[in-house]
Image (cartoon, rainbow, N blue to C red; front, side, top):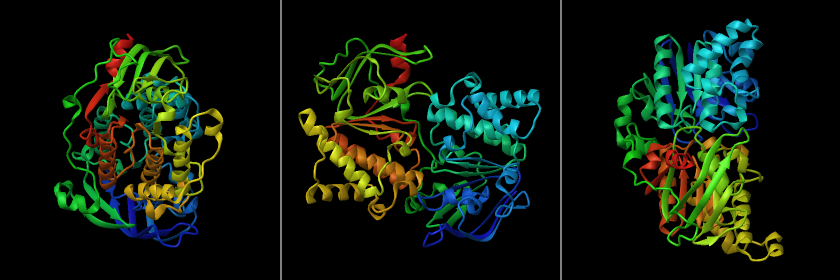
Length: 491
């Protein structure tokens, strides 16, 4: 179903190939995993499989890629998509409709399938992914994890013979990830050929037939799942762990309640009397109070329970009733933003400069402005000293971004963009770090580097408020705040 024969590809205007000498097959009823460090060519390999390279991205390809017998480079993408379904790393890139139901139905309707059959297929795909109750919802109001499920449901409704999935577990909670593994196992049994590109590996233990490890555009290791139990190999190649113990139940829990007041001087930041209602009328928080001390605090809960909404409330991006304080001092309507470094789940929403270096230096300038007193002094643009620029360079080095300093941020891989946004948050020198899934696109080496960096920042006295489903990252946390406890308080 999927055949790569000695494939090399160079993007248009790129000085060197992104992938070189790639050969492998995926037969009907097989699932193969491609992994490796960020920027190693995994996404390019996926684009070759669905024809986007070279048909859309242009560039030069040698060797051959065949999907269900069709030449992927010569067969129009629209025709090829009838045989191979693709889930992109950012599912929003493939959305066309405004509601969940219409999005799942879009491709079916465009192929002229009868309306009653479309409805049947949409319901079946939604039930399979556990999103039946979301069919009437605005697609842009969903969490990133829910969007991931919608994107996959739209593909499964078409019944393709082959699937190519780019980081399908990146935004899913552990329970949804386990359910996805079961779904893929069922699809394998039905004869689907599946190619998964992912950094997180543990969830594929029982469904993967072969693992392909890439580095610098080449396949450098390949073998059965047992290969990943070699810790030396995984460390050498910068891979995630093959097996993970769930740390959620063992993390000490923050207990929210009316006793948590904003004058709590032991807390780095606190919220009191927090209430928030969505435009739809759904109450998510009602008179909730909690405080967060120094260290790494994980905010955990299922997809769609409001974790990102809480982060947006804390930083003033969403308005809510209640009051906030930083180190016992009440803050104004801007929320915690002046004292916080924020990393959003979608890194693209925070990247706006021409180079990586400019992104970090601009964030450093914003941090200097936030520390000034007086309205007008905050508006004037500060001049960075040589010492300031050296500090920015050290942050880039710490996050393995020094070699990318002059690259345009939008030219980077998803994992590289994620690290740039984290670098920008650190450049502000905040007392609070709020990070929403900061390791969703990161390989093992960079995930470990981020965990070490967050620990160092916490040890400096900062409060690191971490929204994450990443079980590997959770093992580095000091405590947890459970969304279900906040919502029980709301009830």
